[in-house]
Length: 491
Image (cartoon, one colour):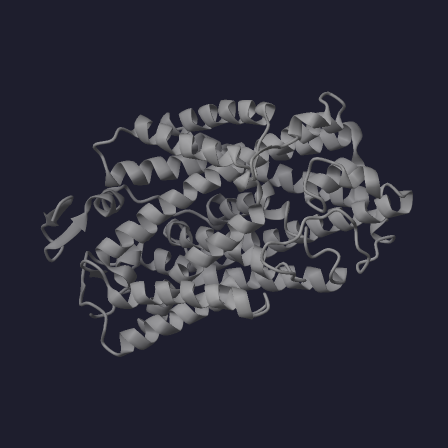
């Protein structure tokens, strides 16, 4: 087989090239939750592309208490269904995602799903991070009176909406900077900085919520606010689909974070604080920011001026620019925009590493230019700015992937079965069925049913049924488990 080799001592396992590189990488040291899992997921949830569009289409359709409750429910679902089984499996094995997933999808299946599909998704997230950073910082400069609002105006080429020249120029500069940071292997430094910056970003969002809190009393949740764009996937009145869709791909990396946990307690505490507490707090603060700005604008009869702004109506960016305004809004928006550059560096690092490990004949710098060019073209089409659509796509693709792995986890009673050579049919079938069911539900069911959680559950059930029917390929032991006292399940 091209790109594979026989491994002595591993029951003659033939490892695909990309998976072999992941298997041979040095394991991360095991440390306490406040040095690994907690900061990692805190940084995820204080990232603007998560909270910025969270309430854009819900704020006028439901009461604040119900919407806040949906955020709590979504955070708990992300912790219990998406994160915990994956993190426990990483903790017990000490292995990276690709090797662990070889039990569910087979070595070739894991090579392509957790390798190439994730790499493509990271290019998209790279474009989202750069686009958000440019939009937020330029909006901050507009709020501070340093730039005219026209710099954020989009143009049209036929029916296609494209970004303006100022946005594209700044995006090109930041793509170069973040791509070079990834090539120079500065991602670790940026990750360390984010451990400091993430709490600062959370404080900034909390300050914005406190600033706009008086306007919440004037907010009428059922009152329409003219000018907002129609939601592309139909109306909904909860954070559940957006929240879980955003988290779906990030939950795959819980395997890697679980492998860094020193104790089981760190897996649980890190997830509870980094996902449930941080995710809920961020979502509720964003809800207060948007509802407070709406209440203040309605009371001041400034609807027309606010709807003419460049930022998406009812987004957190829009609320800060129009509800706070001036120099304070400029500072908050610029700092939140700059925070998106660290995740951009991480995404660039991931897609360069995964693509180079699979096709090592192409140099790392060439993969960086390829991915950066694709991201630049995506930004030019304004597609990464439709963050809710990106969330929907991520939930569609990755929730069934996680579901298949959860089904494997449950069938093996929490143990790791080992490596399955080639393609493992139950895992691939479960993933495809989960996607297909979600596509059908998007057309015929309400968002409460057509959600990433439903796709996860369907994929887990399909895998369990096929596995119990004996459709799994035989599993081969790789090496002893990394956790003392824990053994792998038999084939």
